[in-house]
Length: 312
Image (cartoon, rainbow, N blue to C red; front, side, top):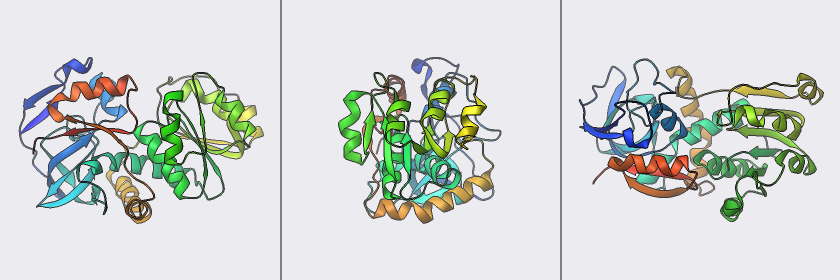
């Protein structure tokens, strides 16, 4: 088969469409013929040499995909290997393609749905009537989190550059803040504060995230685009009785992923099939041209998901 390989860490140009051995499913795994995968920030980090696959995972990038298992359309949460023509998947890490969703579009659902649900719902316990602040609202994670928050009855504030505000308001965001020109902490507090913050930035946003919290607020950190190290004023956090959690999805034990996937199928998939959440697809790019997709995502020149599509 063919797959996108990373012969040496570096820029998008190192991504190589090459012949590689077919995957051999282990006990409890099935072989999925990949129709499409989707680009995630973790893929960019792996390409740069900063985010190695977990032990035993495929060496190729790609944390989600959609395709056929014995002719049945299924999408999958992966530890790696989605940028390929075939991938071996634990059977309990599969999800059916939701009714009403085009086959290739389902490639952009598993990673974002599992990440957002496990952090915002399972971890931070967002409930109806609360306020959710989503950073990076135009990303795949952001566009999904906005919709899930609204579907759960929350008020949603998000951050994005001005050019993307109209699209995010159309997705259901109640307020959009231009992080490049406005102070999101001050504006969020003016709106009553955030009960839950979904953060992709890490260090550079920590102090302002604490300032933006409502009493008993919860910060869920899922990325460190703004750095990994900073100082925390515990006094400010304690005064708000706030909590901070920080997680990744890829390295979780298989059994934890199975539980998350089951929760997503039970609670999120019905919302997608009812049309209350939809995958937001920026564009489709041939799998062999993955370098172009990485350049787009690095430049933040997209809204929603960039898909990598195999030839029919």
